[in-house]
Length: 234
Image 1: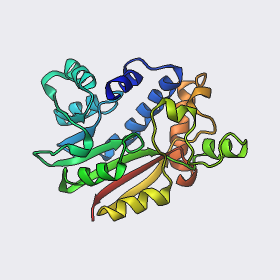
Image 2 (image 1 turned 90 degrees about the vertical axis):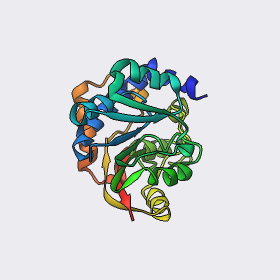
Image 3 (image 1 turned 30 degrees about the vertical axis):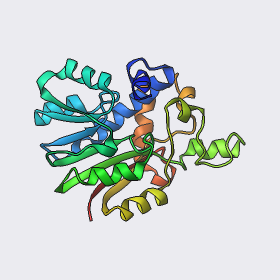
Image 4 (image 1 turned 30 degrees about the horizontal axis):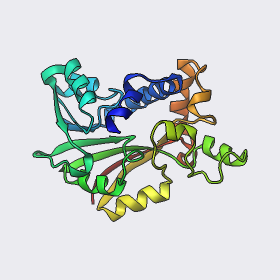
C-alpha cells in the first residue's frame, strides 16, 4: 500500500498539482522557523523541504517506509541526504534532532497518537516538532455541509480519499492530543484560505494560490484549511 501511494507524489493528477503548488508556498513561508542543524523529515513526499534544508544546513535526514521515495531522494541529493527505511511508529533514532517535520503526516497514518508519541523521542531537549494537518473546519468543509454534500465537517470527502487521508483535525482535538502526550504548544496558526476543494482550483493562477496561502495566515485560524503547530517537550 505504501509503495502504491508513492504514485500520488511521483505522478500527480491536476488536483494534486494544485496541492503541490500550495504546499510549496507553505513550506517557503515556514522555512525560516526551522531550528538546525539537524532536521528530520517525516516522509520525502513531494520533496518540498529537502533542498532548502541542504542549502542552509548542509545535510538532510528523512525517515520513510517507501523505499522508492527514498531512492528518489538519494538519486537527487546523493550523500547530502541520510535516509531511514521505517514506519514512523517503529523508528528508533540513534541521534536527536533540533526540528522534526510532521507536515501532512498525521492525517495519513493509521495511529497518529502512536506516531506523535514516538516522534517525541527523536527531539533534542530544546527541539521542536512542526505539524501541518488539514483543518476539519476549513471554509470549504463548512460549505460542503451547508450544501448537503457532507453531514459533518469531519467527514472525509472524495479528495480526502484520493489522497489517502484517514482523518482531519479540529483545533480542540489536536491540542488535546498534543497535551496528553507531553507536548506544549510554542506557536500556532492557520495557513491557506479556500472555499473549494483542490479539484475545482485547477484554473487558479499561481499568484492566486500564493495569495490564498497568505490569506489563511491573516484570517482567524478557525477558518483556515491547514493548521500549523510548533511544539516542544512540556
